Amino acid sequence: MSVTIKEVEHIAMLAKLEFSNAEKEKFTHQFNDILKYMEQLNSVDTTNIEPLAQVIELQNIFREDIVKPSTPTDEALKNAPSATDEHFKVPKVIS
Image 1: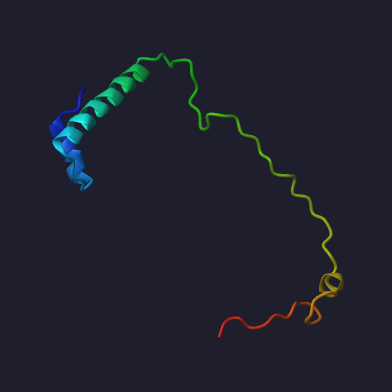
Image 2: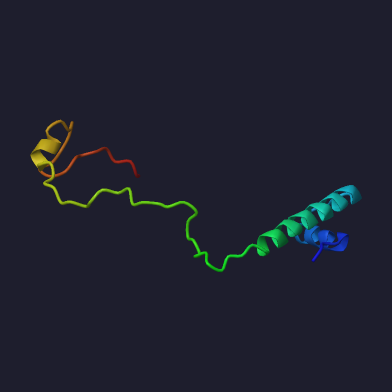
């Protein structure tokens, strides 16, 4: 399969791009080079190769989710400039 200048013009029209004749000729050659490379890849025997989701092996880097006791409320609020018995008090930011 090869790409013609008419097909490059059609692709340019779909992308709403305008090219000179020299650029169209250049893109035609570049598209054909890409297709030749794809033909090479299609000729590779992959019958015993399993499909991959990732090229490199990934590991879960997250730690175990272990329940630990939290900081007590009075300890968390002791340095707050303004607080109620259970909450930080902050200035109103939405009018």
